[in-house]
Image 1 (cartoon, rainbow, N blue to C red):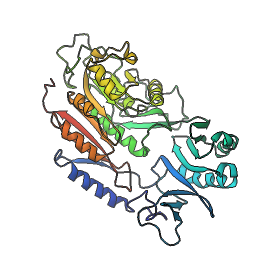
Image 2 (cartoon, helix red, strand yellow; image 1 turned 90 degrees about the horizontal axis):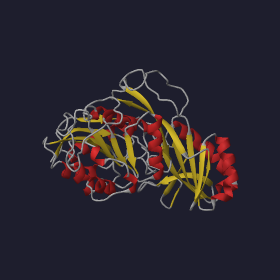
Image 3 (tube, one colour; image 1 turned 90 degrees about the vertical axis):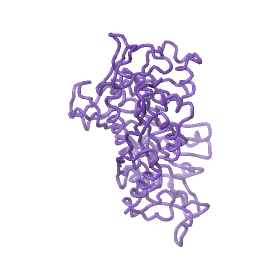
Image 4 (cartoon, rainbow, N blue to C red; image 1 turned 135 degrees about the vertical axis):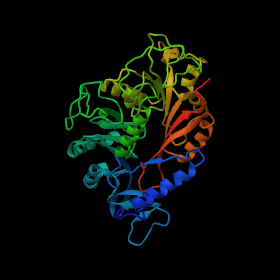
Length: 446
């Protein structure tokens, strides 16, 4: 049981029993996807507490003082519970990272003691990396007027801190966070010298690798303003599952390096298990990966070890910058990230338009054995579905089962679901993450 004093009033958690909510999700997903998959569903359970690596709270001010607040659950107001205008004041949160839980009362004490910090403060966001934390304070006043107080606060708390107001922000210690991502399931042993480097401080020049050849720690950096998975434990499970299932799709499981390839414009993609008939004797026999919506490289970089080359796109400038930085830090040389929309990427590969950002990139050289999709809740655009439907293998990670079901209705015209996983990314809620591996029904992708 969650045993949270605010359960029933706070709208964040919809279930109190972890096991009950997981059974509910598994049953719902199996029923929803019965038309597409009748095999065994892999289920990955979350930690039962302290699993959220990021958290957002409203700040509530009233005659009793300043408080953290969350949206109130429908019908949740009871005698003795402070709740106004649809919010309930809280003093704890059982699902956040323990470091956030410890910092919350300390931060609130500092805010209550300083009128300048407290005035017009309406929200706070917490983020945790492996060895560091970031706090973002949101104001309805010019944040420049509180710059000095925020600098003192950052020093006292020992965290990175960002103050934001409309059109402005002040930064203390940086706004990027660094994490060590432990990934299992890949053939990482031959890429670099192995060694047990756990416990060392983050180093931009280090490449960490567990002594076991099927596990590796990747050094990752991401911006707090960009998307990141909220459940770090479950994120490692998802990435490991994707890597495990991608092994062999590109022809190997180890580090691929930059590969030569043949002219495969339009529908001439290589199957992961065989070499394209157009490949020369000197060309790579390894297939390539295309990833849409790559972010800071959370999946791209570990997956790069399974393919000859990876072509990925992302529209966020900060995310592209971090993806390239993360690739360099982890010794990945076969990843190309285009700061373009998915529609633009598809137009480029179809030869419909030329783009300055792809100048010098030989698109004809890519021979895609697999497509990786991790779209937002709205799911994939129809143009993306049409494009990947001509690729032999597809790995699709979805945070919205309803849009995944909609997209599978399209993809299953050319592919069939080979594997299905359920990841409890959002414990104690009705939300769930799913992973699907699809295989083309026919070897002829023309």
